[in-house]
Image 1: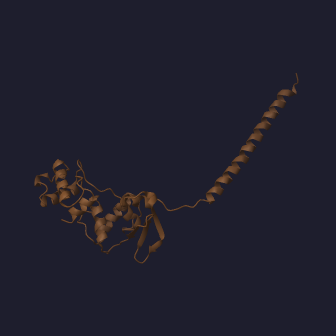
Image 2 (image 1 turned 135 degrees about the vertical axis):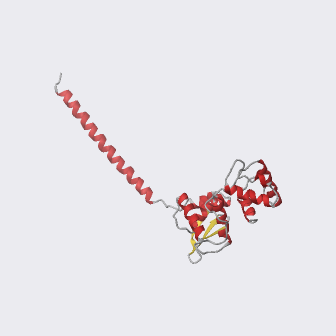
Image 3 (image 1 turned 30 degrees about the vertical axis):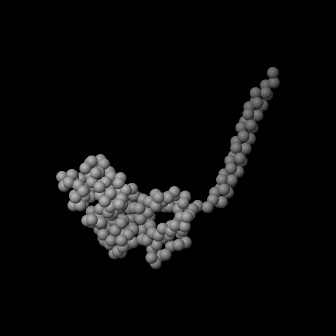
Amino acid sequence: MNKNTPFKRFKDVVLYIVITIFLIFLTSSFVIEDVYSAADQLTMTEKGISDVYSIAVGMEPKMLTINNGETDTTDKTTELKTDDGTTIVITEYSLGDKNEEILEYQQILYSLGFLISQPSSELTEEVQTAIKTYQAMKGLEQTGKLDRSTIISLVAEDVKFEKGDSGKVLQTYQQILVAQKYLAAESATGTFDDATEAAVKAFQKANGLTETGKIDAKTIKALDALR
């Protein structure tokens, strides 16, 4: 038997391993280079905000794009355009501003429990504090302003009260229903029961709203108008 055979086989194995490692390294280098080359050709576009806002305006996310070239820094407005040509204008507001849109945003903050006082059309210091609290809860920059990201987040909120819910804000709306004679006074307990559902449906029917029996965003707006 040739004594050099085992040693020769050992060398062959070592050589094979070395060559294999080298080939793997060489191949991976080309793959990485291709990946970086492909990445350089990618164009990143702004997403996320349009997806969130589309929930509020009832469109598919792909139908909404943000026209970054249509921003008026003087009026602090931003235009969002859909593929069908619809233009949605978002106006930002800060401390001291007055506008009916501010009232709508305050109504959402009030319904969510961030605002204690009655909603108004002015952005006061109390409202500013409520906005900062909301922004902190949502992971937004705490500017205290109704800026674009905050407005989009507020509009996308699914604000409603339905059977089984309870709370002081709900009781406030029950009291409005009582004052309008849709609900008995003893039923304004802060709990959404069968009597409240029936009262809400009657109120919605009388005001030309969809009779869902839930205190949704449109019903909240109609009830707030009666404060």
